[in-house]
Image 1 (cartoon, rainbow over the protein chains, first blue to last red):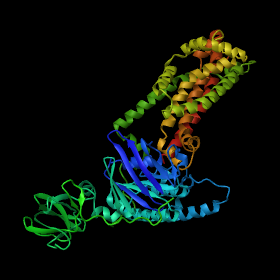
Image 2 (cartoon, rainbow over the protein chains, first blue to last red; image 1 turned 90 degrees about the vertical axis):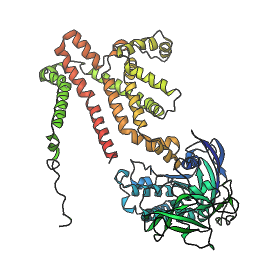
Image 3 (cartoon, chains in turn purple, brown; image 1 turned 180 degrees about the horizontal axis):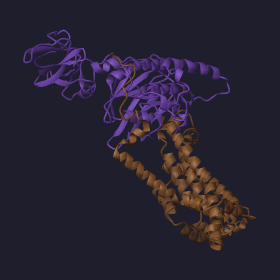
Image 4 (cartoon, each protein chain N blue to C red; image 1 turned 90 degrees about the horizontal axis):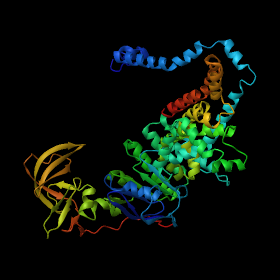
Length: 336
Length: 281
């Protein structure tokens, strides 16, 4: 289990975050660029010193523990391979041969890992000969081969194509579960974090605003600020004593369906294609809002009714009211 | 044919390297480079033109003629050893900003680089001369920094150290500290991370710095003239021969100095450039 409560002073603000990640659990940290996500990971890894708080891994307080003894693996967007070593030497870099003769087992594990990562044929190549995707896979193999007890991933799949990214996400999930590793992944794309993590923390301006289940976070953001960060495009009044509702472009139905949520009257503006769907600009409560739809909802200027599907409701203070979040999915085994 | 089997030849590329000379600016830049090389190498040409095989053999076959060469090689070898052992860690600490008051260290190094060697020699007399505290301390261990082999080594170290230290610091500074941190996160203690990652990556730069330091040590003259007139190293042999017997007699020793001092740095530079090219893929 990784237990973190830290404070790191930065030039513009202090980064403060508290969270726990159980053995085999995957936590995602999501937030805009410059929100302090990477600082949190660097502080847990020990690359950046803490200005307060502590990091406890498997019951051991890591305060004052040097990098080489923390047993924390860190994988960044830049793979950081050792350019003078071959792929095989990079992958084996963190392995210490022990006298109990587990070399054979390690070699088998290494071969299986490299095969699964598709780098089995590259073992004698050097980093300068690898593509970006190959280099990142080698860096992942290196991080997984080292005897780390926690894994920190700082946007490691950024810039990789979607099938490769999905494969790597699968692989890390399997490894984390098999070795009971707490894993923290940082990304500035919500979808990437959702694809990987069971729970997601939202960071902005150095503060951890909310930690919730991957699906729950979008359905029940704790505040209007979190709602905006996770993709809500507007927070509008919806009757009932100054209550506000969040409008998410993918959680809206054109037409009237009061059984699934509040219905708002609006007027259609321009409609633009968006992938296989459309984005329609609709004037709702005097605000232009871009909403997703499967079909063109009507001609420009036409009146339209929009049903917000089970939207989060916020009080005048911007905090979530009603519709309390369901219990978070927690890992079965949480403990050192 | 939708997909041509081979790309069409690109004009200019087909002509290979000569194709680069087609523009007037390319011709001008090559011409300029040739002029610079001719000017730089002209003294070597003059040396070759004024030497004959008989003059070289008669000068070098005289009894004890090659002992200054041996003295220079030994003293420079020791000086380089000192620089390697002390200068390499110091260059690393400088590059990583781990020394207190780093600007002061840099300024001191630059001062060492900019001071005329003759002045360095004068200052060394005041620092380690026989009537100074350091000189007296050296005398206790039967060493003297005045007209001894030890003094020659000291003078060569002082003349070459700034070149090696600055070169070593630049070589280590070019290694991304994040790689060292990564090595430590993978379980290496700091010294082991430096040995496995930083040192191999800095090696081409260190080789260049060492080559320059070797050339400076072998050719050290200004400080040597003041503190180590004896025993003669090869630069001093050139000077005294020139003084006593004239230009023609000194030239064979100049050739010997070049032949001995130049190949090592040239080989190191060649290896260093090749290693850098290979690292860049």
